Length: 241
Image (cartoon, rainbow, N blue to C red; front, side, top):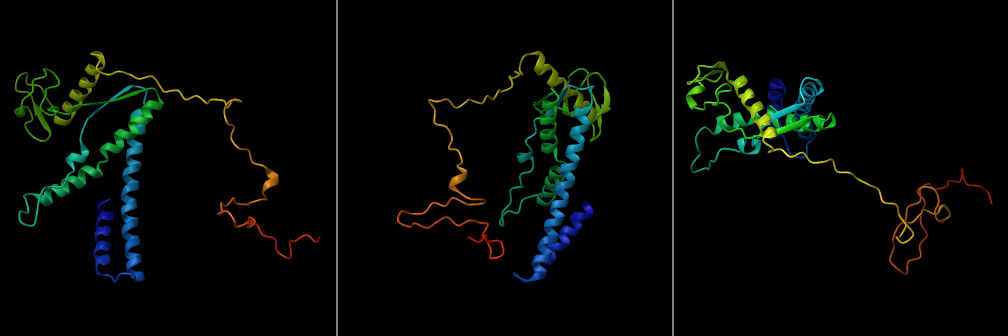
């Protein structure tokens, strides 16, 4: 993906320098679109593979995700020409990495695939999940000693920070079910009503009213033109009278 991203930026620079309406500009535009489509297809394939691997196993019937506001997290940093802002370039890089991770797409695919297999997906609040201890539930900012190390200040529990947060999120999902906060809705049934004598029946096609491949055209009153068939007869195929 990084190699394709570099190629995309290179073609974008070429596109900006080429004359509008020229063949070389159209070629550069097609190369940019092809590189963009490649990245989209790779992320979509990744989301499908991850969701299938999660749902296809028989050891899990409940999947709990953080209720992340991806749209808000990837909002651009506020900046103007008069006040350029701070860390705008770093924020743009972070936004790009978040979108490339396909968090929302993975959750969407897991949701519908789990529903097909009779499994459940929940989204729980994500606040303080990285600061809460999975053992004693003590929540403090100093519990997160570094990006990867979690050390509880109360019980001394040590774990990888991401693994500890995953346990916290999973427990929140289970507790939401046990306390009755999650209400499962029954599947909506769709029935087909039969058209009775008291209702207007759909208009049936009369084969005698039109020929093969003939198209019905509405014309204003007073113009009595016959319908023209799409399949015209040629002198070679015409039948002699």
